[in-house]
Image 1 (tube, rainbow, N blue to C red):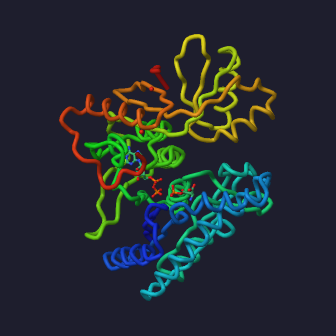
Image 2 (tube, rainbow, N blue to C red; image 1 turned 90 degrees about the vertical axis):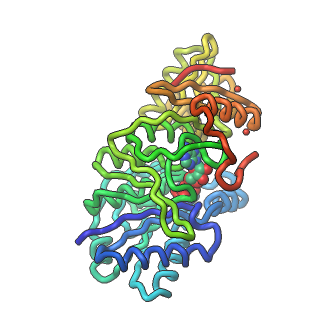
Image 3 (cartoon, rainbow, N blue to C red; image 1 turned 135 degrees about the horizontal axis):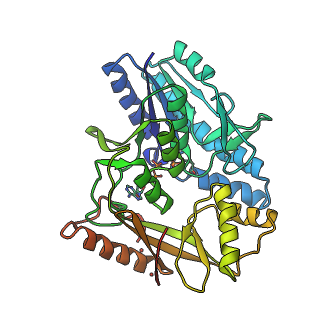
Length: 377
Ligand SMILES: Nc1ncnc2c1ncn2[C@@H]1O[C@H](COP(=O)(O)OP(=O)(O)O)[C@@H](O)[C@H]1O
Ligand SMILES: N[C@@H](CC(=O)OP(=O)(O)O)C(=O)O
């Protein structure tokens, strides 16, 4: 049995009517082949943040496992909505969530790591249904507690399921058709990159390009899965970028609200960085002579917990900055800017320099209105 694995992120579900649009697309796909479909969904846009705020408003010290159980409900609900939209079209569909998906994790709540996978439940549901709808970003730990794989990790769920089912391709749908030379919502003239290597996309993602999660790209590379980025439009699906072993693009990335941690010595910084590396927390190094800084674009809370548990020296200061990174050939040049608008104009200047003559109007809406310069990464 051949199975198609597709993923629709929160950007595809801004309104409840979007579930019907996605269901209609799946119905079309079904008509085109006899393949079964597994579709991974994220929570509706903004839902995960709302759930997190709600729990923390009730108890700002809610336990990580309590938070995970709450956040996972965003994807659970989304999968039920899509099941409803599919059955309305007469398509037999079953939604599965972390309790039944066959994804076992450790108990690292908040950013749990996958330990093993078991395709039996999905396969058995595919025997009696045409479509399985899987709630993204979740699994269960060895005690059967729900665990969240991390923010934006539904991409990872999709790739894990593709690997479980021996699918050779995983299609990731979002509100842009693929990976661009910069965020097309921020940078006029950002260009779609038709083919990119896993390594390049991972680097872009680790520096703030949200479109694909770096852990998903790593997993896809290890399991030889081709990732295809797509977008659903009123004229059907547009295929933008194929991620394989080929293609290295130049690009500019922007990461807002990154945490810049300053240590009193480079030894303390390096020791902290090694600790983060062991726990797979991405860091951006900043060549800043004498200042011993390191930058995290997310996972600050988790990093500080590791720091406390590991008896490491706490950073002397933590500042919030926007990181603008330019990827040229194999090197990153990193700029820090405390003012977001200035960071955006810097990113635009860099992009104009990289791609002279490309600048036009930004694609669609500008989501958000915007740098000491250091090298690296
Ligand atoms: N280089 C890039 N190429 C394409 N999109 C990018 C890039 N950098 C940032 N983005 C942003 O990634 C967004 C899509 O990712 P995301 O919001 O996580 O989608 P989803 O919710 O569907 O997973 C786009 O709307 C775009 O603003
Ligand atoms: N909803 C979760 C998981 C996710 O992957 O979302 P998205 O596919 O919209 O990036 C989050 O926001 O963290």
